[in-house]
Image (cartoon, rainbow, N blue to C red; front, side, top):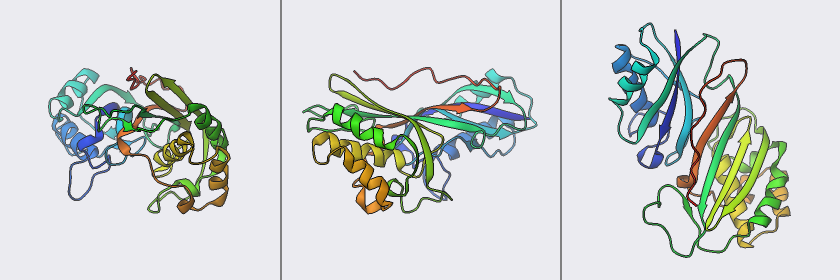
Length: 259
């Protein structure tokens, strides 16, 4: 049978999602924990691989098993073997045609910026700290250039393995609450470092270093060297995944909100 799980994790001390030959990863920890409950080795597939230092409130994964366990046993059992910075939030049996990655039609990310003169000691690995004033109106104007289907070659890492750089951004909104600025982005899929690159570009516009139309120029250039520096990983959260078909998976219960 195929089981889907919802996973939440603090990415600060993980070397990203994907299992590696050495180093601590979310996938490695989750597979070890789930295998203890299933009593056999498992391979888990995720909706979206996150980088080193990136967090998730609503990662979705699946694995195949012949072990008979109820949803509560998968959740409680796996959590008893997971470190404190990763937790299973829900479990559900699905059909064999469900695929955590390929059945997903939209991914939701939130990027969090603390725009204050004094940095937070407690949130240093969970938000982007930006001391210079940001004009969120200019940032929103710049964001409009990224909506729709585009070739995002300029906004992906050199090591990106995606076959096509074309992606569709359905939503890209800026909001502010006091010293906190939130970037919410929804797309069919994302390229390696794409969201952090977008956040870095919008921060440059918000500082007044670039005009909003610069974002369109970078996009049209199809040249990664034109886009500037990626925003830090600690401000980025995977907060939702939408799926095709009638399968109603539980949704994330919260968004990272700090003000």
